Image (cartoon, rainbow, N blue to C red):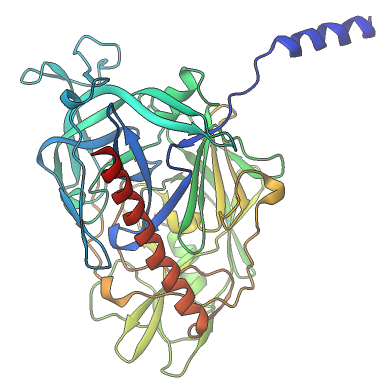
Length: 473
């Protein structure tokens, strides 16, 4: 009987289809943090026939992928750090042979959306966390050009539904996502949901957030057996990547406090309510040696500390979050460095929230984060994102690194804190540093190296994007 059971199991395994090869964007799986555009991670995506290329912000806090489209209010150009002006492409379903507005009676439209009489199509309006920031338009079916994330790089044209953003407001006009936003949430309209439902990729994806702004994005990535995990909380009416924290450790002080928070790549910094906010802020404040500093320009952070004119390093306590299930999530980047008259200061990069708790992009730094919607878990593995395809080759972050931060005073222009909106998006805020341990040197040759890397990333995006525009024009 045991022999027979083995044969039956072998036959079942033989007919079980293999998991699809993971997919990435057709230009590659690289993403980049662009500090002049809200410190969010951006990717180059290609849509439609003939294909058009866009630079989109990656947002796990919302569902819809939308592009500026036949717009009456949208950004049409982007000024780069090199002083050049990049003309942005504008999508139009009428110019794409594969594009078609979603009719009002479509199941995609459903009960949550209304019908646009003017366009005779299913309408949408997405309102985001940042003040007066929204995208309004109609839904369109078209193709997203992807490729297998392997050495063969086979092209995969994925049918998707996207938002034709006719009117953009707020930060979308200049500060963040001026050329589109790539919603990665759990709703059926999101690209990961569509790829999974059509059998093109496993129902999971990963995002990597390197300490120097380099990133990766892979659809169908389930992570590795060695990764740490915590389950998603899925009892909300609108499921999100919501997880539970059971304990906060600041330095050596552990506090049992339970709260839930959304892992949101579309929010630059972390927002926490009390008591979690006070536990971290007061515990942090009690363990630093530098004097409190109140910046002359209003910023969104409450706890900042002045560094001496000749001070070239500083120390701060470790910050760990114990997730539901017991795994530790070490926060690699809890502070940012800001300029001040005569030197620098650093701030605890957490904002006191008035509504929902958000684990922002700064807390994800140094990790390959896996959003596994099949197992309903969040996974994380140490990584610098230069090789994130498998656990054995993933490079660990050196938490005792002596690399200094790369402050960028020229873009220190914080926005007001967000209001009580129900969705999230990027926030234009002071430049985040990339701390990799409790001891941070401030000055040295590494600052030039990191600044150079940041500039090169922006220029690479500019060059790649320009190259696509020339080829596809």
